[in-house]
Image 1 (cartoon, rainbow, N blue to C red):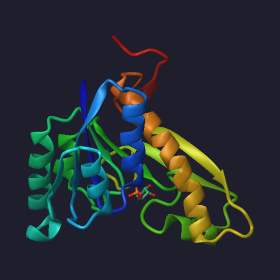
Image 2 (image 1 turned 90 degrees about the vertical axis):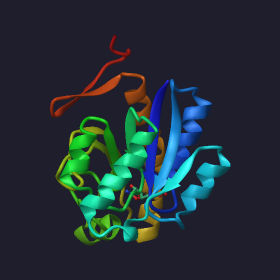
Image 3 (image 1 turned 120 degrees about the horizontal axis):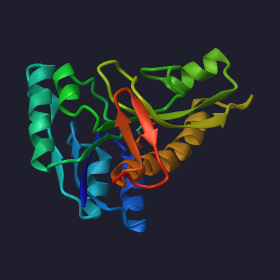
Length: 205
Ligand code: GRF
């Protein structure tokens, strides 16, 4: 059994999709813990209701990013993770943190990277007039919203879209590709090889 630790900051709908898929599809992995940097994250309740251990490491209690990241890593490592999954975790991570989890830190970003890194991706996509938008699952590197791409989903942008309608269309796809990507990794079918993602039909021995 592999251990997955999920980090959230709010709603936690991607976390929920992963929890459901892991149970329904009988992954060779357990969600060992859900950790939030905000005590009021709605997703914490969802996780607790699913019987998953939860913890909060509030960034406001630490004087700087490095000390917060150190406390966060200590809490994560308590659960002996094989994979750390960022699911709407709204914190920029320090270089030391990213290095510590090199190759086992995954993120989902609501755009077709490398387009629109950062915040307000749906508004910016509409302003740019793109015809297609989407979501990207990637391994995390030192650069924000950047790193070897595991999977992407593309959605059309319609004439009458507003931020909310586009966000909803993208989110539905996030809930499909993020569990698939996490499953592929815990099953050994998807792995990081240097700076590249390798995929195979069957698990590597
Ligand atoms: C998602 O759109 C994700 O791509 C982004 O933040 C949002 C989190 O939503 N990083 P949720 O908390 O998973 O519902």
